[in-house]
Amino acid sequence: MKKLVLIGIISFYALNIYSQDMQKEKVDAMRIKVVQFFNAKNSDSLYNLAGEVFKKQLSAEKFKAVCDNNLFPLGEMKLVEFEKFAQGVSKYKATFESVILSMYLSVDTEGKLETFLFQPYKKEITGEFKKIKTDNTLTTEMDKKIEAVLQPFMFESKTVGLSIGVLKDGKTYFYNYGETKKDNGQIPSSKNLYEIGSISKTFTSLLLAKAVVEKKIALNDPVNKYLPKDIPVIKFGNDTLRIVHLSNHTSGLPPLPDNFGATDLVNPYKDYDDTKLHTYLKTAKLSQKPGEKFEYCNLAVGLLGHILESVNKMSFEKMVTTFICSKAGMNNTRQLLIKRDSALFVQGYDVSILPQGQWDFKALAAAGCIRSNAEDMMKYAALQLGTDDIQLQKAIYLSHQATFDAGQQQIALNWFVQDWGWGKILFHNGQTGGYKSFLAINEKTKNAVIILSNTAVNNDEIGVVILQYLDK
Image (cartoon, rainbow, N blue to C red; front, side):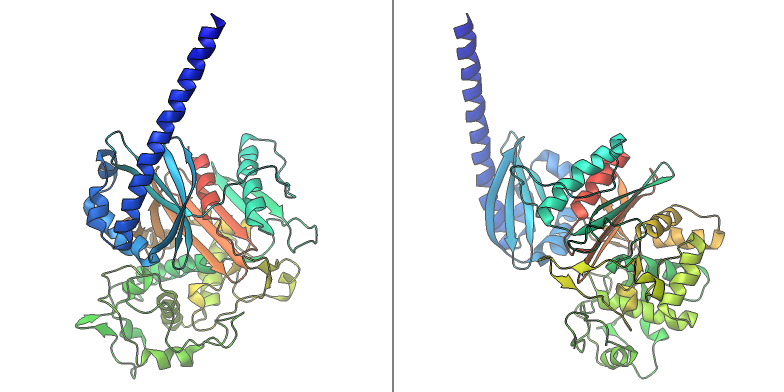
């Protein structure tokens, strides 16, 4: 009897392995078609590969917008390498012209495409890994979840140091991993300062919304209304560039001005001043009709900040500290470091773990100049969820309203409104030469996550995992 049972188990196991191999082959056959249609930029043919489950989640129109705005701009898939097959889904390492992503594919029982997903590339970890120093006490279930997510990430990415802030049920929690400087043995704290990069754009959006609420500016105003008179009207055909286009990445301006020409590649923005910006604007050309297509643009947000400086008659940093930081009790958030900051500002590193200098900004400050810490950024997240200041609350609400639909995501006033599978999330990330940041807020659950890292390695994936844990 035992032999028969054993034979039955072996037969079942063999059939299961055979079934998995067959499914894996079906997925790989689908992979060939997906790559072919993707590289041909044929969104209609890609969508025709999909099954009913996929099509219920995403209409043909939305799928085309995702492809045109988010996927096809990545360029061709130069190389697609199989990595693993689990629970019916194959993971591939997809190498594009300028980025490497993980691609996940699966097919349904009819052989139709069911999963078609791209995420930041994450190499599979094998074998034991050395744990990184942390102040995580591993007391609560949340502590243990953070640990389970962070330790593999720190090991794999070689990130030097990282601080996380969590807002859950009205309470804040902080976790710190690694070192403030490579090999110094000092774990960061929630008070250590980092460059937050493009998360600065969400500060710009709130400043814009505040000016709109106060009727100092209107979203539909022509940009030229707030520029020197000798700058020609910036337009594409008969379509004029307007303020709202600067705040949702649909301006048609290039990512950086033609005369940017960084004299210091380690600190690229430091010499680009108002004079250079005005010189560029006199000959600025739009590549497309404003408001028609999403293309991420540092120049547009930098120009928006420049305009707000003129409207409010104060510097970008002064606007941030006066109108936002003072309201939220954020005492350690600023553009320009002061003397007491030097001991708290962590050393930055690039993806090769080579030391990097700070990034300094002039005319394009609003695109990414802010330095902050986890404590202040949790106060910022809490502010985004509500304040007793009626005028400021109106501005916050306005800054969160979608002004452009890019398919997979909507763009509010610089905020990205994402749906990662469990509802709408306000999101932005940031990166400078030696720093990487992530901020996500769920207005419904009132949960939020901030990740500040002193290594320019993508940490979006772990941020999404942590927020999903908090929300679910």
